[in-house]
Length: 245
Image (cartoon, rainbow, N blue to C red; front, side, top):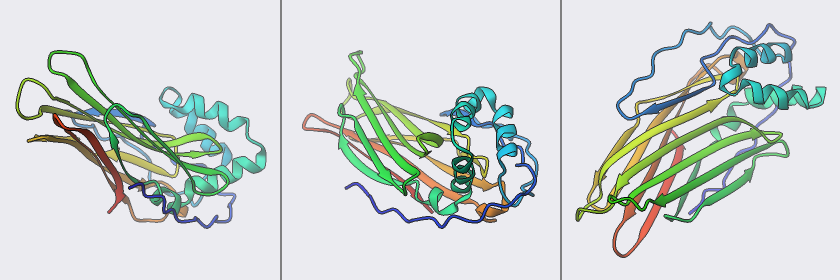
């Protein structure tokens, strides 16, 4: 069942504060067996994001989503730019970035939930079984926050496993991909886990978002993301969930 219950954030007043702190790189990919090196960043001392500070942040992450985001951000009106930053700072919006889904392997799932008139939370699942000897199944489960149509935080878990040559599915592998151009938080993934047991295989990770401005709050936000699939002679299904701890 698809979870369409979304909270509504309260927009905070924009302050003319200092520039945004420099964050970790905006995009990263971690495959099973790899570790993410710690990234140096300044302390979260700013009260709010500012337009000038956000544009400087995007330039520091130019090759990791900053270029495209900067071009889209500049097309917004001055009023929209201010609201854009308020949405980035809104902790309730990031908490609303979640979903629970299910479907059949081979059929794409695309869900758009409107958080408010400016913000959309988008869920996508793609899945296929290849024609190789191992009949390898690959599933991608993505949940993304978009403000004025601009993706700001996108979290993906990819699972692959063999479905042929054994009575059981085997050799599961998982990786995670992150695109984050939300200057209010630095997001990091745990080492992804992949398990194949019997007819079921799953891939999972834990996301930790660390506040970079005081307007977002002081506590970290931790999310669990899982994609699970069962491929048997009688059916090929998946289910996924992104939830807050």
